[in-house]
Image (cartoon, rainbow, N blue to C red; front, side, top):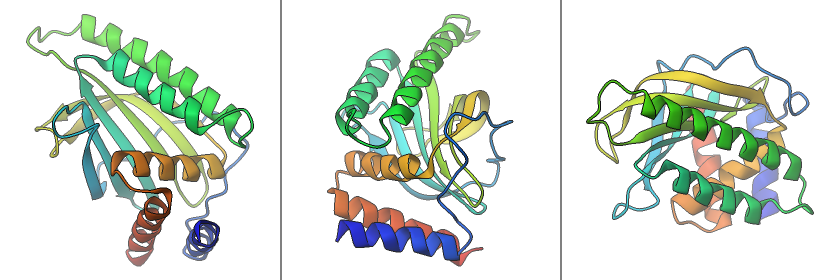
Length: 211
């Protein structure tokens, strides 16, 4: 069932112009796509409402489907270390996508250091949270990962992105981006892999219907 859903998801998106394939992994993109008209399709507090450290949001960005993680935490390095641990478990050396995962983890740690430096130099000394935005992007002509320093407003569960300063954007193989989106959805929304893939298919269909 998982395999057939994956085939269906890829076929649907190719037919609608949302092709999952991308150029070779590692090529640098010139910048993040305009996010000013992002439409939130789904969202959840992570890792839990009892111990919130941020949100995972499924977004429509024109003809792109985006899985965005907005982190706002006093313990950002520990949160990122937890993400790194999940990546290592989900993407062992034997799995296709291992090298893409290694690149992602390396860039994630570099971005965390940039977040820490920005936090140290902050003007508002009452600000206690460090922030980081992580985007997995599937679109008609590219698949990307984008990291940035966000300016956030609102409370957990209703976080709003006011602005962001790009740190790193790069193109990645579409299979890794799609499969990791499923992994993150499963973990964040507490779904099994089949339900997570169905959720991604549902949102891809929703994006298709508006383009």
